[in-house]
Image 1: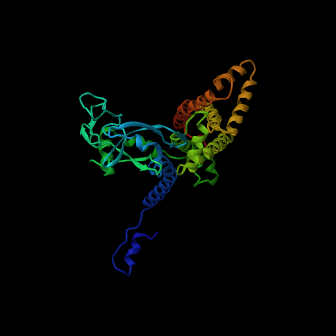
Image 2: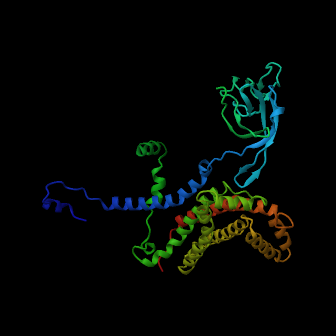
Image 3: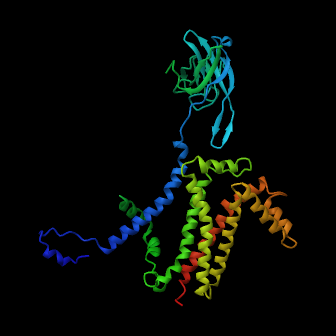
Length: 180
Length: 223
């Protein structure tokens, strides 16, 4: 390190560069080394903890549910099993769809209420005839899933595929395509 | 920004003396490797503590995925090790740290022994140190079962047979540790509870006592 008075002989004029003090150098070195060590230990753990957020989401496979010929204009309840992989645990939970057929095609609605996730049913409340009704907080929806009260979004629908031999296959859920 | 927040708190709670007490604590010349290189032997206690901190942190993160159940334990460990990002690293830190903490603790004990630092007035700190040593062995023993693989199972089985050989009380100790008549579901939950709650709590209390005593009594003098 040069001493302060050496600047007086500097041919490039009085642009006296401020020397780093011993204390500053030590704090930078110690601080940098500590940051490196703490970071080296902490970063893998943080990445490990947030991994579920960054895992790839996959669409579920289409599952055979019912013959097209059994569908009516009135929504009917159908159950089907899907393969669910939850970390190290694989299971086949039963899913429910309310399916109806009209001039626009086949509509398979998910019964999960868009208010706070309880389960709705078709025509289960006298006050709301021919509607989906949620017993938790009184949300109700039209036949196409349009929200009429409490909920702020229409019921989700399952992706629908019809096979050549006349079966309805249901895939993953998506937001309602008919109403908003 | 940081300085303003710090000053605001400091004006109200006077926190500066708390960390000043640690930061300005003088290290005697005979334990400073800058003066005598051989003084590096005085680092092993601090290294043991450093690794202990890493063990606690990595262990906390591992419990985000691990489940202490005989059906799922192995699969949850397999999942966190092979499917979760940095799972191998975090579990590796806990696995290798477990061995390293014993090594560092042993070297620290040797240093204390050969510098005679256990002598009066520091006998109590030696005793607390020995308690920490046994707590660490307990943590190693209980943690070894948790992956619930063949090595874990048979190592614990051997440990149980050793406990069984204690005169008179052996069979009772064995059954208490196992939580039943076999090494099984109840042993796993029991070991998990001991490994993550009981022993760490005891360890932190003992470490606190260890550090308070060394600050009270100071480091022992040069040879």
